[in-house]
Image 1 (cartoon, rainbow, N blue to C red):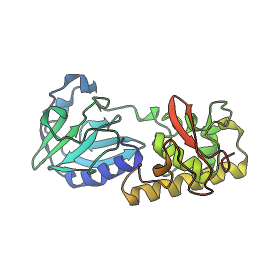
Image 2: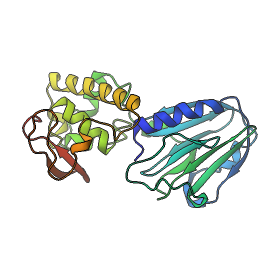
Image 3: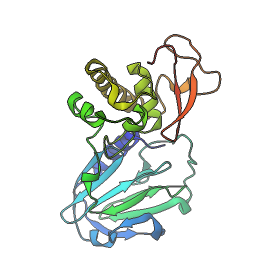
Image 4: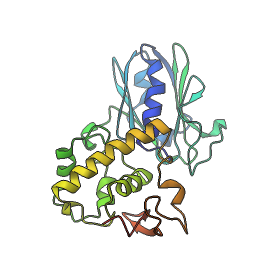
Length: 253
């Protein structure tokens, strides 16, 4: 599933289209267009490509295109996918999975999404997103958690509070930070919130370098019978914030 590490790979791949002009837009799946008319992009030059959380932004000298990838979306630029494969998704390249495309003065950008859980937006409201998880400071992270009785994992995954953390990243970060995902988010001490901020940055940097959100140290053990890579204790499986959650009862408190 595309979380921040995958969308960062998409952003890096899409950097090559900066300076090209959009000459056409293909919308074979009208349902995939969530806001505005993408045809307004035609004739405009791409001036930059950005990422905030799990959203990719393509800036032009006119409108901005925002792309959300849902659980199964991949970006393909000039025939090259941003990641080779996604966990829990069909990685079939059939044309029927292509939901949206930009035709450029040179090359193409295609959004391929088997389950149609993503979408594209013209001039999206970026104020709906919290600070980017890769760049958030310890004080800003603590402010995002402050006063909340919601489970820590659920709060970390609230994109309006902190943009970029998905299910796999959340489990890995909390395991590295030795924090129980079910704790009330506003309950962390100053030392714990700083530890969480360090773990968040280090985890995301490592997963980007390794090639995806599924490349964490905990990932191979997220299964029945799995054991903590740190102390060997049996992992517990729970449902937190509506998502399957794995954690170590011995070292996460």
